[in-house]
Length: 566
Ligand code: DON
Image (tube, rainbow, N blue to C red; front, side, top):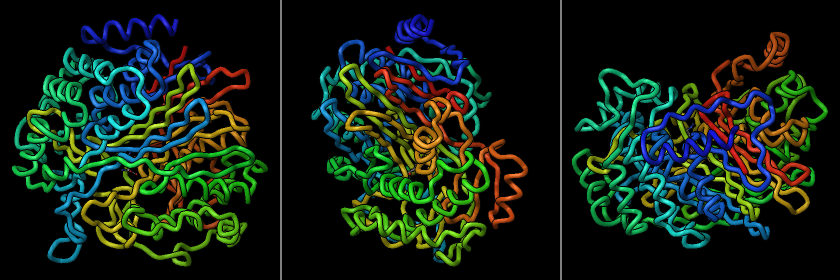
């Protein structure tokens, strides 16, 4: 039945508008595939990935096609105007990671977001033209294709062009998110981009994006130059000049993605590969797993008071390290080896008390705003040969800066907010930073994105990742310990209620319905300030089962996510 639905979805969506009507799986098991699996945040993007794999494309080809398709069908986070990170494990076991994170424009300055009173002007760093870093996604996809592509570049962009040109029908989630941002769209643009709709968007409305189709066609014909040079680059630079932004033609031409050594660690016999700085994800994840090994979560009741107390104390220490020590390694000497060292972490976590929370002021002080949720997207792919890709990509906030480049039909990111605009002043995720993550021309802003691949006895085991700003790291951490320590199947691990803490704000966030009143009272007695919230967790992951088949887990409870294999 799933195969028939999917076939229909591919055929119809490429030639006309199509509303995906995919019922979420009823049982707790995820999708099962004998040979290959794709898990993304939108059924149409999953369909594109599967189509590429069935044509003989490898996992990297599928990832490239998905990235472009998400730009069309998931415009709040899918992007060509943003950036991201990819972790790749080839079937022969070689692991590489690509950083296609945005960069600060050459004209940026350390104090560029401070007003005359010395305070951060929040609107400048979050909304409008000045909020954008130099986009990295198209250069990233081009680089992935140059190194690992099998099908032609042109074939990989076709599905996205078809979706943009012919249109697709909006899901309820996307219609709602477009409605929420109408004021931002009005404020950030000097014209009426297609997303502005006075009557409001509804599920089933058609999104036709001819300008985006044309931009994608330039990229299809000219590769990375179709974005960083020529008509699209001119449109972007004109947008900047008219809107008061600072990204220049030279910034675009100069943009280069970077292959970085993965962060590698071990956890109970599993090998973990994740993203190195400028993402904090890999280092923080390894620290959390080392803490988990030290504290022995597997002996505790899942999401009971004891486990949540220790997990919270662990997370607070790891995020305090993140705030002080992490930034772009091309600009700041990040003490990577020291931070993931066994002895360092043992000592760091030995200060955790059994029954009492440590005051944040004993770790470090700060004054921060509450956490706010926005958008990023993660997808996972495994192909029939066993190649795997974990890729997380974002515009930062939902629809990024809200600026849609006139004539080109794509949103620009507001990633400059991931820098520490002023030491100790929190960004949109309540994260604070210091000198390590200060703004400098050409520098990459610190990220929390954590695309991650695990091996068991040298073989592929788990491909995982999530959106969620600061909560990305703890969400990925939970996806791993839920499977390894609490014996959950992948879908069960994804469905399970998540919790999060990050040193500052000094709060333990718990997904609505995540704990009993008894556990809540116990945690409060130990000193934790609890706040319930909707989760931003949207893990899309793939687990290799004992018989070698693949379980695709998509976060269908919290989003339109969809996994399918064959
Ligand atoms: O790079 C980062 O860590 C952030 N820009 C990610 C933003 C995000 O995940 C928003 N998602 N829900």
